[in-house]
Amino acid sequence: MIIIPARLSSTRLPNKVLAKIGNTEMVIKTAQAVASIDTVAIATDSNEVIKIAKKYGFKAVLTGECKSGTDRIYEAAKKLNLDEDEIIINVQADEPFIEKKVVKALFELTKKYANNEEILATTCYKLIDEKEANDSNIVKVVTNLNNFALYFSRAKIPFAREESLKTYKAHLGLYGFTMKKLEKFCQMQEGILEDIEKLEQLRILDNGYKIALTQVETKSFGIDTKEDLERARAWNENK
Image (cartoon, rainbow, N blue to C red; front, side, top):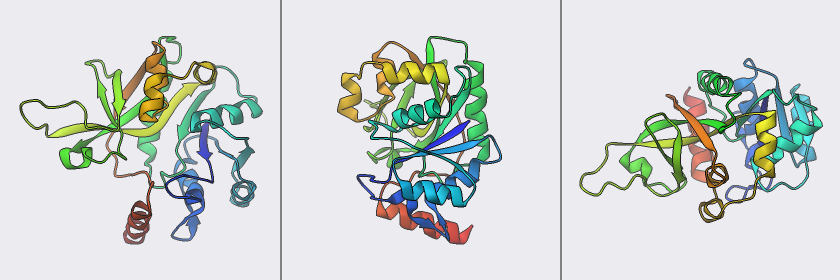
């Protein structure tokens, strides 16, 4: 199942999930982009989002106040009575241009490691240049030779002491879990690094578990600011 967390009161861009991209609300456009892959449910704290989701024929689950998007999809998954072996893909509501091939790649990676208890979650990254890596809104990831995460940061990592790097790994805000692993994540003690960077995936590393990644090619981008929204609307018009 694909679950899209859609909190209405976003800090940097309030009500962004209902912002129109063309004639369609952002969260609905995201749901439509992945609807052919698996069943989609929208997890939200807003009755307005529930109403709009139902208008377009999508499942929607009303959740309470949640610390993170992952906590929100867990609450929704419990209400949907998902089996512990169910693969759950978390697709952010602000990814209206996410390609199906990216979500499918993440699904296959999650399936590959579903029974590996050391690997709690899966996610993906794309390559970006040095200029993009300077943007603190873009989360960077450093991986080992087997594509397991070593660290995530808003800072430009790794630090190149002698020569500038040509490419960096930009983390995409999609995650794969089984229901059992999602439950374990949400019951974990929050980490110090998570609080410092404000990146919930660091909770997994802080608690001694692994995150597996796969490299993907994508033109999609998350929408965090008014400038991002303007860019998304312009791109949508020119597609």
